[in-house]
Image (cartoon, helix red, strand yellow):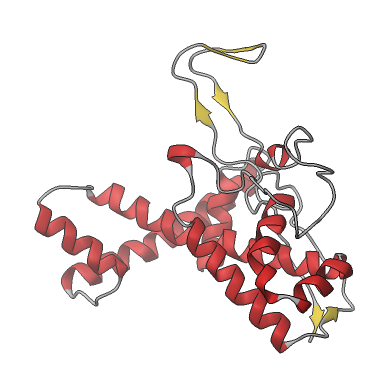
Length: 242
């Protein structure tokens, strides 16, 4: 349910997902929201020491904060952001190891490069290629383009991560790339609050994965990427032999 809901939520923001596919994505996202709302009601009646209980307790003691709808929205987005993106980060990383045996050998020989590997993998394949659009509040000139007030602007993080003005040979996958100022976690007030956790999850996973299964190889079935998506970059299936 969580996987379907988080995929549906990201698809609902994807400008390429339309008509019946969009309706199905919204239904999956709303089904997850209903399940989360039911958990919130249970925790409100009987706290359990988890994150939702802590949030509800802080709302009660401070006497202010989010209303019920905003609380539900924040928890749903927190759940989705920590799920779908992490799945894509890990699966894209495994695919990079299969595609770049020289870099895989480098990482296997020096697990201390795990964080560098994760950053390069995130640069080459951001789990989110296009974040939700920004609303232009007042007419703005960006470069030589005028953005009228009220228009929507889409960022393409994947393009920023391969900007040849910022990255030498941007199409090359290179663990030792430094500095690696990719934009996958965005920037400023829009910077991903879960970035440190995501990097830690990646470091733990890839260090243990390579230690436990040093001879893993591609499976017999081909890798499949989701079709029709322009916002999310991940895999639908990634068969491997351990």
